Length: 403
Image (cartoon, rainbow, N blue to C red; front, side, top):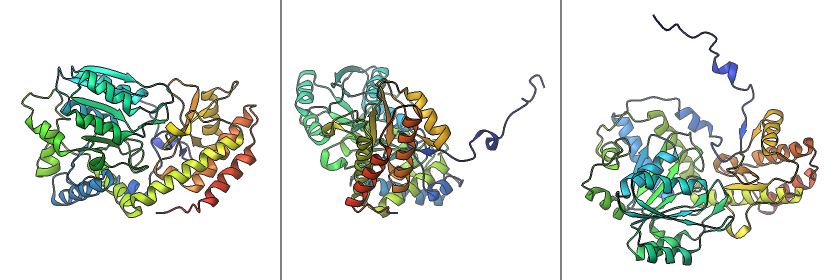
């Protein structure tokens, strides 16, 4: 053989830390044992067993998306692949798209629309603010887009667009399809696809659903699916062609070899959501995030976004002068085995509050590691006050970990 077998390759046991890091950043998040176990199973991707699992995934997804008629498809890829499937199938080349931009991921939707040769208008929202329905309505009336893209929770800036229902209603009044990125928010806070009139809902497995990265879900409204079915042009994406994906998800036929283990994992993740119920899950996430925020505030730090526009699923914390984000993250990771996220430009760090992150034991461990790391770096915080505020907030709300 011309090329020799490489030498010195290490096993994963030699590379991974002996104690796994507690994943408390903006994703991926910790996954339940049942989800992890399901991810270790391989079955025939076209057999009767898989067909039964697919039917249950669609049924549970309709509950989580809150849609009676939504056309649910799985995507073998990250949340960004689901974003691209929505854009590629709903945006016709040469048509106009209005992209509401609060940060990195909302701008990614705009870029994807540009790549399929849409005429994209960006509505750039002021930093730290939610999109204003009145301003969006003005842009819709002025530019007359065929499609509007927006995120519910912008993980990069930790801003929540909390007027989605009003924005979608304005788009619907002008016959404009609405694509929503709900990757970090679906199952962590209220979302109602049918009631709000959303045409495409995107989510990834690795955040709110507490599943593995690399498998995602998308829901199309009846109107969106009719639009997809009526297109006569050939999509430039083959794997992300929704009409081809429909062959597998609804006709028990072949598209490509499905990510079997990932589908089994997302089945279990969805089942846990359904067992807990959305209302209980929303309450758990809100109480957990509010308690964490109370602890951060009591230690002497400030949150990046004001309450009116704050995303509770990913909390942004301003870094004081003299503390470098990478050094803080490294200290937390190396000394306390807790991992949080850096920023996309702003001088902040971010702590996730999605799925399994919202457990009392994870909150206490994370806040202690966070405050103690600041103190080690010479930025003296009142760590006892922070821990007391966290505990007090959880106690006041009667916080009990559910399923």
